[in-house]
Every structure is written in C-alpha cells, then in structure tokens.
Length: 71
Image (tube, rainbow, N blue to C red; front, side, top):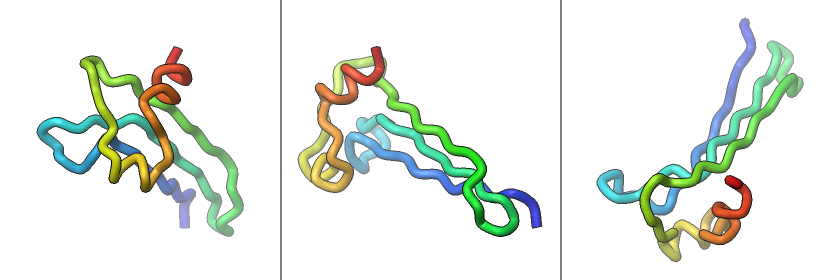
C-alpha cells in the first residue's frame, strides 16, 4: 500500500452557490498509518463573506479569525 492522505475542508456554510471554503487541512500517513506530514491553510474569500451560525458552531471559526490568519 502507498501513502494515504486524509483531508478536511471547512466552509462558511453548505450552499455551494454562495458559500466559500475558508480552511483546507490534510494529513499524510505512511502504510503503517504513522503521520508523516500535514498542512493547514486558511482561505480568505475574494468577496465579502459571512460565516453562517450553524457552520461556525461546527468548526469554531469566525470571520475575524479568518481575516487575521490570512494576512
């Protein structure tokens, strides 16, 4: 078996026509499931955005955190 990558995406909500990705994370494992790498990026949407309350409840990210961590 080759290496495996598990990833997670956090968004401002679940409506693909108006919500945005705000975080991308991934962890790489070797064939024995030992962690051998990881990445985590916050994404600042190009237009003004709001994080829906139900999304913020799930991932704990708010607009000010995203803005500060993208600069």
